[in-house]
Length: 616
Image 1 (tube, rainbow, N blue to C red):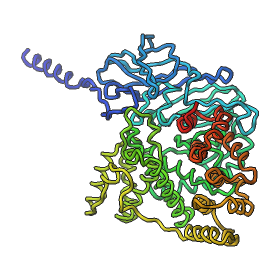
Image 2 (cartoon, rainbow, N blue to C red):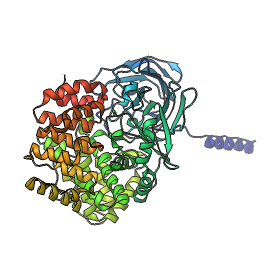
Image 3 (tube, one colour):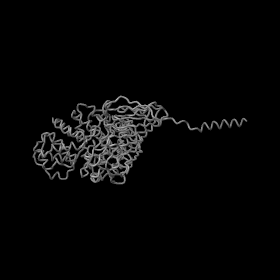
């Protein structure tokens, strides 16, 4: 009896010990984010399932966004929205009430949903509206083939919330899958695993298994086709553009290999590019697995494919290791410009890389001049609270960020710097970081390790460019400058000396015209080199800029400038030319052109030009 009792008690205790302990909920620690209403330390999304219908007739995307969530005993989860029509919200399959907060012109509205500690899933049924800023609906005439409409999204920085209710902060990374219904004659592609051919029913399924921030969720719908460059690279484009794009981007796989040799494995399996209609507001957008690109980079000679190298570099800096907030944007773009130039050096040589670096430096000097009345905006680490994060997307993040890293490389030596960057990408893969964490990692793993002193804080937290910035030399550009100087002095151009010039050399030549260049001299250059009809969009843009600034009207250039501005929506090109009009006291002319061009521009470009020209 005594033995039996002991056995019974022992058995009971063993059963208790064998029971699995209740799993404690854990959650990542997120930092304060001034551009999102989400409170991810309380409740955060982890996976998105999208079920969407794209209606070109009504110009509406409608559907359901279903999220798996993780919560820390929260009673509420908050999502970001802007100009969305929310029709229903469900919590674990049951409809529930929801609250929309106050509308902010920049941030939109918080969507507040009641949950409890056991809530696993929320689902939001919604429609986009005619105010949705991320979407651009194009009629057939605005496309290359002019037969079918087109749609694309642009989420960076905080526009994804305008087409998906989501926690729209770069530090919140999620996986996603999607089902998208489009007209049967069109194809849908996303920043995910993509189809290579059209389906008969217009239904497409997507999966992104690596966690990404909201701004990298992207969708494009159009009459497009696919052509492989290699097993892991290829091009999507409209039929009339496809072969040109394929030839232009034929070095894509070489770029991926060069990048991997520098900083480790490409972690996204596929690197494809879709060439969008010309209204796309950026040169490129690094959506993982599917870079969005402007057709303005198709020059016929691969001379502008540094843009593809730039977007590829984002596969490490930005996509793999993401800036935690938009105040840390330089961690995204500064690293990418550095990496881009290293890829170009590996493929095309040191001289090409140095030319790109010097163009970068001139862009930086121009930006510093334009920001002379707001020096705080020339710091790498910004404080954008209360402002649109687009305000921080200037050449400071790109070019000063690059110069900082290039100067670091010169200080510590390339071998050590490359080992440091490779370890940085590996250590932080599929996560986010901020400026302060980067500085700690830099000090511990590079500077202190090698007993090196460097003025990091001055570079990051002070305006302008420190005195120890590296000086880049280019024999090619020195030759360009000498050729230009002789032309200005003698009014004769040595054509033979220019026969082998690259587009970068021509850009440097044109951008460095002296202020006292005469109309006759510009006329002579145009007659000799036909700049007003250049097929290279970069050369065209800088020539048109100089034509506006110097009052040159030859070769019907005014009409060509207007045609360029109404056909191309790339924000950099567009704002450069409208700024030249403004600086030349020709705002009235600019406004006449802008009124015609504005309907063709994406909202990102419209916002910039509206502010520049004080429109309307």
